[in-house]
Image 1 (spheres, rainbow, N blue to C red):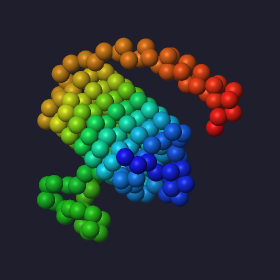
Image 2 (image 1 turned 135 degrees about the vertical axis):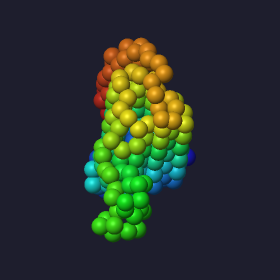
Image 3 (image 1 turned 60 degrees about the horizontal axis):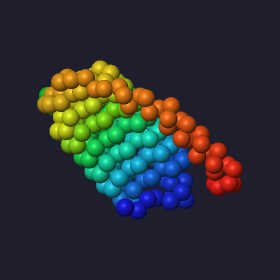
Image 4 (image 1 turned 45 degrees about the vertical axis):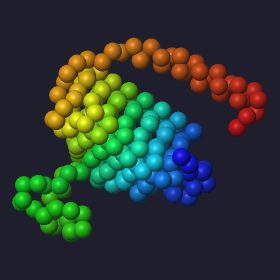
Length: 200
């Protein structure tokens, strides 16, 4: 997998790109001026990030695996430590399927009835492969979504959800939170090492 260079990232015009951001050159990025990327992120091959007016905001230490997509006019936020498995689709826009209006983006908006709503994912959310997350959904801190699920409603903190539609099937352990002070110490020690060695 080849990563975009710093020069390429600058030329693409992202709203923000943090340090150590690894973005595949085989992924697609649209409306980069509405995309903010944190530190230590990785976006793998064949992903699609298509930001609407609401934008896409990605925190620190976030991984988006192959063939995943973030699409829509509403805001999509992935907080720190989110992990998006392969072939996950996250939508902040949704067509009207009732037949009261026409559908698809080739039509003037006067003939469609597209619903836009923000999608928010808290810290430490993990989403299993092949899952679909629809507009307006909030996944609170620590939520885990099983593979091949359809998420239509909000999910509570550290809940485990799965199915079509996704329902709560358990509670996730919080032990992972104990690693946060260790990570902060690691980051601080690494920064001090680089500073002492004039390593940029």
